[in-house]
Amino acid sequence: MKKKFFGAAALWAAALALLAGCAVQDQVSSTTMEQATQPLTCMSKAECDAWWARAQVWVTNHSEYKIQTITNSIIMTAGPSSGKRALAYQITKTPTNEGSATIGFAAHCDNPLGCEPNPWQAGADFKQFIRNGPGLRITATPQAAQAGVAMPPPAPVSPSGVQVSPLEQPVPLNLETGPGQSATPLTPQ
Image (cartoon, rainbow, N blue to C red; front, side):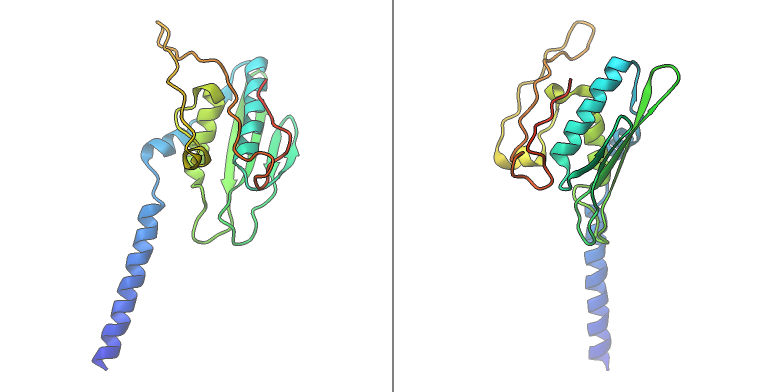
């Protein structure tokens, strides 16, 4: 009787340790959460058009699902598929009367073990890409890191403290053969 009790207790302890490990692994830094929740507001039509084009590029390059809808106010992928950890995306653009607009980001999957990539990290990466453009990316994408793609040197900083760099569009890895990718490359205007 004691052996069964201790065996069951050991099994429960192992299960709790495994779940605790998953919970720690899925934790997101406060910096990432702050970046992911900061409003994304463009201030002019030209800026809003450029940011919307960047949003299309980002979703095309990061989604395993195909883009289902693209309009002037929404970019939406298919998915999520049942049990998959891949993120499905919904990006919205809500204009204001003053000519500015707010760009919203939503990402979710359909897996009880969580999503890959983490939706908070994806949101922070998306907003960094939209604000800074492809020429000012600070970190490599996971695909580029795995392929050993070297990062460009940091952009020069002007006397006013603003980072200046040409907007070079990095070529996405396997754009023509990657899952959920279009064979037509998108570049921001």
